[in-house]
Length: 484
Image 1 (cartoon, rainbow, N blue to C red):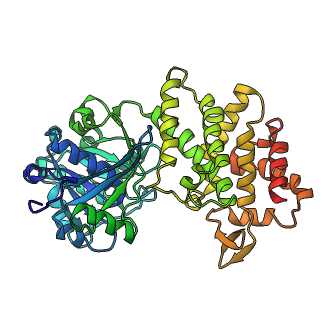
Image 2: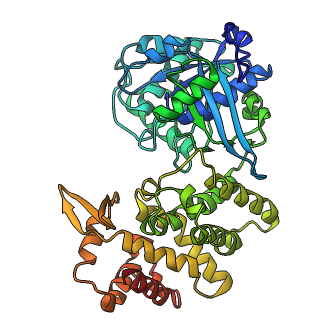
Image 3: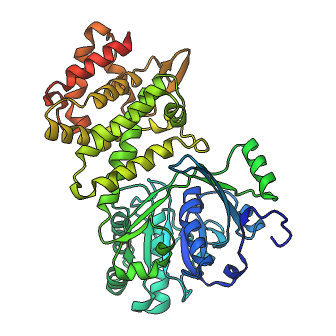
């Protein structure tokens, strides 16, 4: 670092190397590196949090890249601001002390539990990571993430005899609702199964705080070879862990004043929020960001676009995104006093879609499209009817595009494929076989039967959508035109 001749990186790292370890982190993924670790590093450089991170790598594979670079890596924040100005910043993150393999160094992981400075546990083990698996936590290591966490907490309890001041703050960032509560439930079940005793359960209940949290930042991770080479030429060094992230970030954590005091890194950014109730932040993200994604992705993809960026550079798709957000989503949100803030948030979302450096693939957004539609947009459609008493026209069009997207033309090796032009695409949805059967023999003339059959299926939507006056007719009309 002292030999660098280019001043393009925030590389003030010397102070942070001597800080004590205060965080254990399960997961080496790019979201943690580009959001959570990035913020902790920023707080360290401002002499606020003053703690480093030991990372546990649970999956197979080597941690040599981290060891070779002393845990250092670069986050390149790239995008455009609301005024259209390019943002291109680089930071050398020095928050990670070391990376330990759970498979090869489990005893070293347990050793961290005896660290008197430890205060926080973070995790991102994917959405399927927080699942209860009945297992012996005294394996080396336990197989599941909740098993590893329970073993770690029990080791800390034994080391300090259940002292109050040696409790921990646990903040999972997995993208599931109530992630903290669900992780606590898994740990409590494992404690009962492994008979860890009443005293441990009491310490767990009163002195280990599990916080629900919500994270939002697009972190694609390592760029393609050409972009990597261009960035390294600009930086003046090679970085096997170079991580690209968008400028926008959000980390909302459910917690009280004790949590806020310990998670002092929340001071470094206005969008790091510690609050006793984060449902507002969860709801606005689910409806505006995730909802507009799910509404537009099939329509954009079948129109010939591959990324949100391409859509935002097409007049019709750009208008669809903007109008579905401002005219059909925002008016239905139950936050009357925050309308101006919601409009600003919506503007940020649309600006993120225009980021030329972060191009989200539409086909990826369609993963599990049916369940996403049910969670994200069916409630919005219902609210729209409750408020306006009529069909939301853009959601009707989006629903028609979704139904057409789910039309499989090829079935091979238990996979179903739709067709766009001369190309086939995988319908990556657990309901793919259901839709394949529904589409058999359907023509533009008979498509109304298909629409009514699917919209009335309560197993998909929890309600009968044909009871919404005019919705089935609007969807049918759009779908018939799209088929032609």
